[in-house]
Length: 365
Image (cartoon, rainbow, N blue to C red):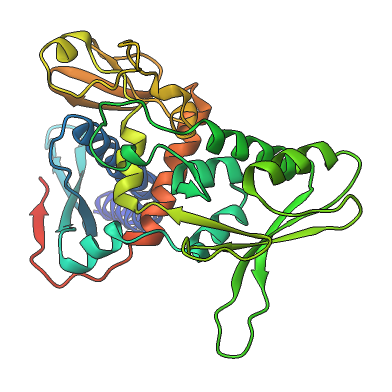
């Protein structure tokens, strides 16, 4: 009897120890897994919608509203024995059983209400541009993706919608970005807000510092953007969205909306030849009839989606569509960086709305 009680006590202690460590160990195992799957799911959704736009198909966004996981641990212990009356050989048996279950419930919210559509169709604000450029992103990437025009220099405005048939205008705009980027890399360019006068909003300002290393670039940039400068003084350039009136040392810009950014980035997708021949997409052509290379545009030079008939190896992100795999290569760091910029812009501009419509809740088994 003593041995039976001892064994039962040991079994109970083992089960209690398992239960006390179950919570922390379950959190350690499940939290990274859920986190990784949610990130991959949202990234795949963004990539899929970019591909859809290239084919003139309707994009659609679902937001993961909540994930509730119910974790449970159960156990049972048993003991048996047999006594041999003809000898002193008694037999005792013990058993311990554990069972574990994970029952997640995932809720999805469709992003399609009026506020969401208004947000993705509204121009990106100057405050958002400032926030992104002051968060470590290069001015070449932010302006190259988000701006449609600086003064009279255009950044492929026809690419803000379905693929245009004619060659876009972008060369002088791209040269302006290259000069701004060179000044930023040499710490000769600062972006900030100017103090506002009474009752007026603060203005976005570019400050170009003078120095022997920046004189040539500043002269070239001033010629492109039409502002005045001197060799020994810093230049302050006010950024405006008004094209009707231009003040001295002021540049006018037109920002894209999130919807037009998505369209612009979708232009540089490697479309399978059979889809081109089938007329499934619009082909942009140069004046001589040759196919235009979207990879030469400001956005296309830093973003490219590839395609493959077979599942690609060493891909960062992959989605299947129209019997092909569309993907971002894992070693294409520029595209990965631009994709991250896109997701941050999307969340900043259109991803934080409260939604009061129907929610799709799925219990996962």
